[in-house]
Image (cartoon, rainbow, N blue to C red; front, side):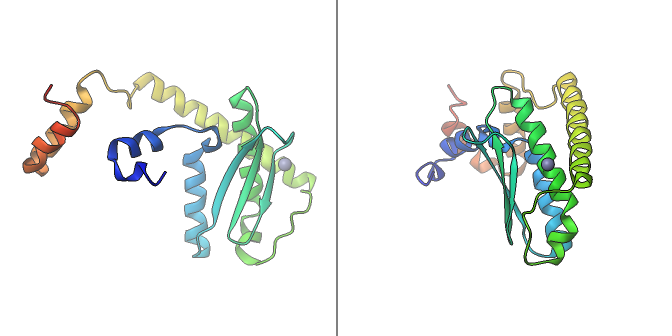
Length: 173
Ligand SMILES: [Zn+2]
């Protein structure tokens, strides 16, 4: 990673890649934000997809949790399992907020129900959102469109760097 960070083109390529351990990244980020807001301390959620396990499991620690997800050909199953584990996290939100020690005991049936109901609704809402995004295609650029939009912004905000950016991005041809 360290060598890519010096180069903005290589750094963008590195960070644009979608890894399946990053599923539901938007929701995870939002949950982490709520933890910071509520607890005043950053609580991080790490996810790890592994071919070595059969069942998803979350390891709760003081400053972070690690969600282990079983590898699957069907990425929908990984996402659903992740949604379920996030349900456990939401269920234990207050417990995590108040105590310094967490038991990683087996969840009660009540907690399991909560986690599945959360997962079902989260994935259903995400599915609706993806459908809308697809219909609008709002993040898809036609050829040349991104270039034009970028150049317009720079022309307006900082015209003196226009040539340098165009040169690096091969806009001149
Ligand atoms: Zn569970």
